Length: 113
Image 1 (spheres, rainbow, N blue to C red):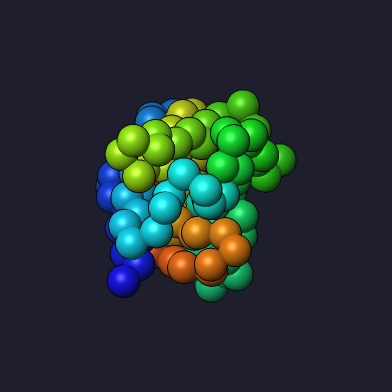
Image 2 (spheres, one colour):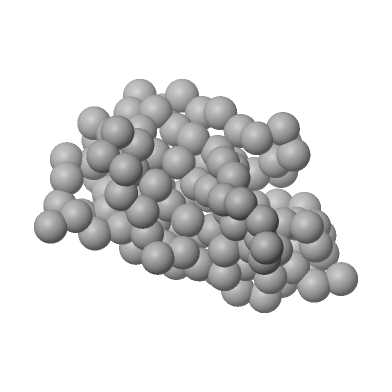
């Protein structure tokens, strides 16, 4: 059974930082590309960043230079380091296993001004 579990969300002030973690079990994690998505209230879910099985990364334009996606295959974990947070980054953040299309339950990030 595949499980995708995010953690690390919370309340932070504008300009602050958070690191999200996503632990995946039930698959051979090292072979799968992973994504982070976010969904703000009343809006569609959007891609934040992705990382391939070989570590190549990509980012949404609005996150470039502020967010960093990384992975630790020994820990079956993908991370999202979020710096210089803005109020508009407030959303539920989801971890996604590409190709298999598995999702986590999401973790809430709230950035207060």
